[in-house]
Image (cartoon, rainbow, N blue to C red; front, side, top):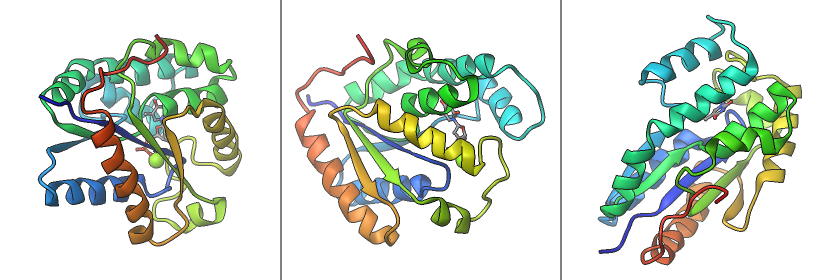
Length: 207
Ligand code: NYM
Ligand code: MG
């Protein structure tokens, strides 16, 4: 039996990731391709609850500790990710390890290698769709600036870190267009990835 694809959306805050995740899931459903959504941080777990309080500025924690919590939040989902992919379900994921390294390299000031280390060994995405958005467009989107890290200066530094993390399975998508135009590109890349990884083993981050 063929496995599902591990498809991750990355990007700055308010790039339209959640919208594109929903549109892609619906399009896959319409084609009878089994698919499931996963969001990081997963705020529904015990660890996710602390992350949520930190982002909402309800608790203070050292940036390094928060970084490890974000990674732990992925590790607690490792088995379910693996099992879903193995049973043939494609995962459509809103943020993953690249967000962890890109944001924390800015907030901790530590090298990218340090930031990437805790995620080593987790299942690797087959496709990373990086949604590119301008600072002007970001600000026009609802709820901008409410959470920690939602500041222009932080976002432009995070954007640079993201670029340094890009590998051959990343594609950069211009998210400044209409959501339908963006979706057309996304769907095209996603369908190709689903086809291409069917008989491939699931990769691991940095191993
Ligand atoms: N974030 C997200 C991190 O700093 N590290 C991580 O590992 C992940 C998954 O959390 N500003 C940051 C990016 C966002 C914030 O995510 C909440 P979202 O997708 O805006 O709900
Ligand atoms: Mg956000």
